Image 1 (cartoon, rainbow, N blue to C red):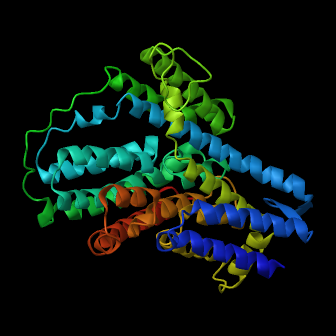
Image 2: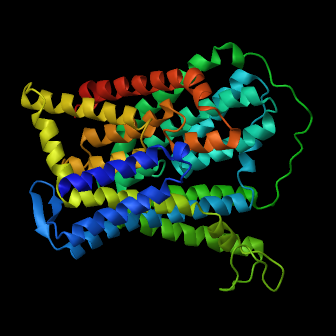
Length: 453
């Protein structure tokens, strides 16, 4: 029966990977795979386990195990819902136009460094997907030449993914590791920030020396956009500050991150309602006007949340949880560990870890990195803030840049600018590969000779 479970998972995984070829949104196979896997477990009365670090597999009732995994998954989903809503509230007030006001240069090379640096920093705060959307929207107002914008978009993807890797709130996979108590915010930043900087700086430096980024952008005189709201800048800084507050809240209270995110959302939403002069009405939904003719920014923002992404995460995380509850991932990790020749305990462990994690990074360019990281959490029973977790955060976050379909940032850029898969593969992938390997080398050197862990 375990063979059937694996076959269902592999087929569902393939359907997710080939969503563009099948023209079926990946949330559909993810949800279907999740339900089918747990149904097989229930109907055949298979034994389920909870993996306890340092102990191994411990048998439990199906209902208890499923409830346990649902709770862990819900923590991630509620956290993401809060973060997405705050970002949408900022956008409701056109807060991201504040960034555009800081960009004054017309030189292509200088603009590349500014845009890439903004992508790196913003993605660490508002996540790499949202940062990519914001910056490509700004680019469309700054650069009218589409071919040039494609190059900028490619470098934005690399920088945004690198920026998301070192922040506990910058990429969904890093958030998963943080919420699962595999990494702490401070140590994650200490170990992954510098490798991530190399990951985006080196490709940006190489690109800035290329002919396409020489010269200046032609000014067509259309740069006369005015903010839609006078509160845009205020809401921009309030929103960013509220999101940054979440790791601080977790550190101080030791409560799960979603609690801090809900507090931040309540804070930002309060000011949003005040600034919009809306009268709260439980019946006002989907941005409809209330009796006074105003819109509720909170209701409007909630209606714009990427619910398909939330449902996809639900499906894939609970599908991987099914494999974990059967002990398959735990057993696979043991087989993987035993299949490689022993080189001495410490050296063996380090080499295995590095090779597996590098392969995970390369794999995330082809396969969605969410299930890869979810599987790694179930496979490796190692302690909090072990270097392997930080390397996983780096590799899964940045490896997806090597193909445009390998990350959420790449997929959204592909949609916004209609970037061709093979154009990206020929023009940008090699830069992403250089950045990925550069950061990986820096991480290993830091771990072995500087941080001494």
